[in-house]
Structure formats: structure tokens, C-alpha cells
Length: 126
Image (tube, rainbow, N blue to C red; front, side, top):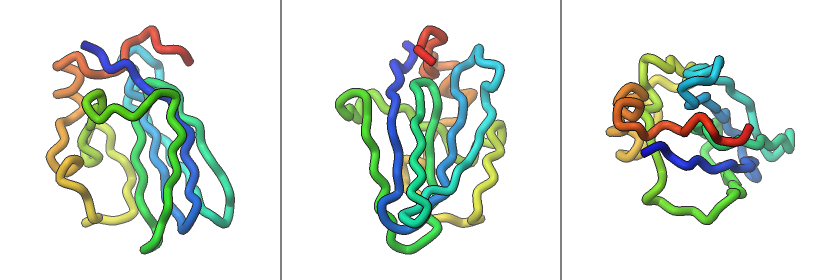
């Protein structure tokens, strides 16, 4: 079953982060492509992520506060994780050995999630 997706607004209220966005829509012309943007309390930038894209960030300072506003109630059972180090994505992380949660460390690859049917459906709104 495909993940329903969730749009979100992301800001960094304290510190500085590099935010990474990956297109996870299998039939999108930008499928597997990623972009990053620097968010900080100083630059006051925010990003809006539509349903169907993956999201991760890297803290660039010791103390960061990251704020999310979601289009639906948070439901951990509907979350989908993809390994942030998946070679198919080849994300340009700043750190070679970042602090990382077990959830992300042991996350399946993009190919594994695709084969399980867990990637966003093609009929998500843009």
C-alpha cells in the first residue's frame, strides 16, 4: 500500500541546519533527485514540502530547534523511512560520521521501500 504522504512547513528557530528534500514519487521526472537548502534562525528561511517528497536535515550547530507544521495529525505508524545513506540517492552530507538515530541507521533502502509498495502514490496533489 502506498504511503498517503503529508505536506509540511519546516523552519529552523535556533541554530542552523542543512535541509534535504528528495522526490519519492516513482513516476515523477525528478524521482530520486534531491536538493538542499540552508535554514537558520539568522536567515529566517522556511520551506514547504509537498506530499510525496522525503525530508531529512543535518544540524550544523550544537543547539538547533527545528519547527514542523503538518497538514495532518502526526501518526508515527504511517511514517516511512529510507536510509539517508542510500547510494541510489547519493545525498551530499556534510559529515562522514554524523550522529544518527537507530531508526535512520537501520532504515530500508529506496529500492526496498519501492518493492514493498510504500512510496507515495502518483495521484498526490502537487
